[in-house]
Image 1 (cartoon, one colour):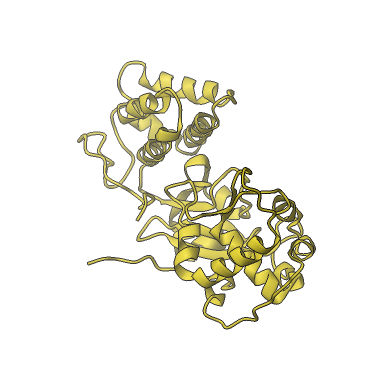
Image 2 (tube, rainbow, N blue to C red):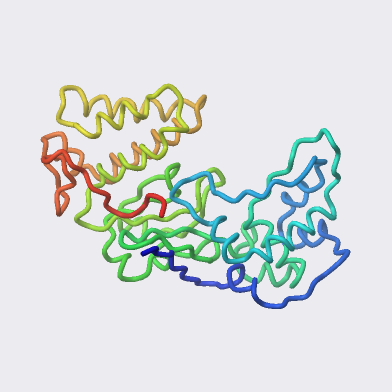
Length: 310
């Protein structure tokens, strides 16, 4: 039996507007609309000559499902936004293509339909409008939630999952772990380079095992096989020198900026060391604080939160 993801919408604008027979504006001044909506940077991007438009269907992070959800749930909006972009784009045969996310194209269509004031009615001056976020609650399938920047993390997780969380991963495989209640009191403000992902780790689950899984997902982007070596050390922290190697690599690699992916992986590991000190110490002693055990004593680690792609 095939299981489909369930979508919980806190502000159903993008994902609920596709079926609505909205107006079909023509000859709109797209640059002016986007500027008035607070999206001046996007307006400038559309002024750059391009050979064609590439629709970004993925999110570059295996834990994030925002753009694929837009394409599945709001294809008419994506097509409508693409027509607006094509109308203003200066196409030249030898210019590079312009890559635009499916979510952005849907937002363009809605701004053209309803105007910039409608778009700015929620959000903040720096981040107007609604955005999508993939939420992993630690049980079941991930949910794609439509919300505004600045929404409390506690609200996005929901009261039951917030109470059960021992830590929250903000930003997917390029993000950081924050322990509760610090994470739950934070307001969701995604970094430009991070995926729009929130993942809760319930109490009784193993932060070491979950961090190792995240680093495995990040490893293909990183150079030199360093992350694979650190994952192997995490799998057996009781081995001679393994714990020291993990700590040293997390601090030294975080200082390097020549490999963005490796830098992000080191930052993730460093945040895990701060969020799960007891779990790391237990693994170094060949024990595990998880219930049930994550496998450090049995050699058979099991997935904990369903963060991997569905």
